[in-house]
Image (cartoon, rainbow, N blue to C red; front, side):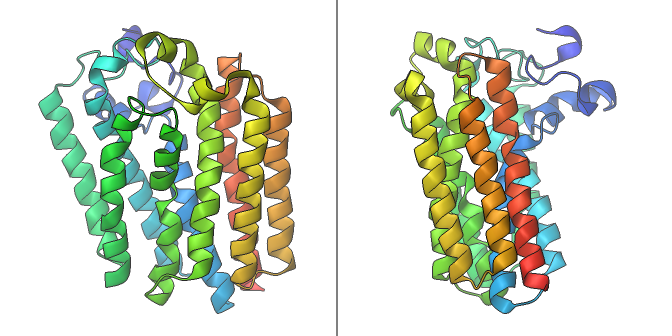
Amino acid sequence: MTESGRVADATGNWVDGLAPAITRPYLRLARLDRPIGSWLLLIPCWWSVGLAGMRADHFPSLWHIVLFFIGAFAMRGAGCTWNDLVDRDLDTRVERTRSRPIPSKQVTVAQATVFMLAQALIGFLVLIQFNRFTVLTGLASLLVVAVYPFMKRITYWPQIVLGLAFSWGALMGWPAAFGTLGWPAIVLYAGSISWVIGYDTIYAHQDREDDALIGIKSTALLFGERTAPMLAGFYAVAVALIGAAGLMAGGGGIFVLGLIAFAAHLAWQVLRLDVNDADHCLKQFKSNRDAGLILFGAMLLDAAV
């Protein structure tokens, strides 16, 4: 255990310093001490909202933007709690994760389960604010979320399943506006999956040695020192598909400029990547929030003008 029950890779945050002590283990279970994952879950939702705005040729619904924000944070918290419940025995064997609330016994399995259900309820209450098609689409994601924690035990490609889950929002914003899926949203979903595979490979390099020792699989172990060219490939596919989705939705010059900035940011990550430096990998992983928000901002501007 670290001092004051802190999680080893999430120190110096508002939860450690400001939150009431009794709430800290639960806030850590929800990863509110490190919200980067919530942002990365949210961004495909917002991209899809942006696509819909470009197709409709007006600024997208602010209400949808807010709902997706709340829903992404709630469901990411529920998903992380589920992941920690499934992985509690493995987490005790990995340096970076053994101080998490369940393996360090800050909360019991029963308490974590109740907390997971409470977060899922918040997500459900957000979901039912949308139209019927969007509600059904959102519910369909639960199967992918449920199986993801088990994939690292089976395949060196768990990042594909994470991509399926974390990109699901790309299928949500478009039907929230139009009541049905369209090809721009489907192509966006494919592009987002490729983006997730890339950035989560960077993230997985933090645990590469521990994972190898305990038999956990990942693309970081599969690619090894070939990560940079593999990452370049996945990012190139992501840019191509997301760009195609935007153009299919009627994106114009502002969108294209945003896409170029997004692509430049991803190229910068590849060029600077050092897979043997865990702190560097974490910073590069986190920088994907900025890349995603740059592109979303361009979508909003393109839709508004």
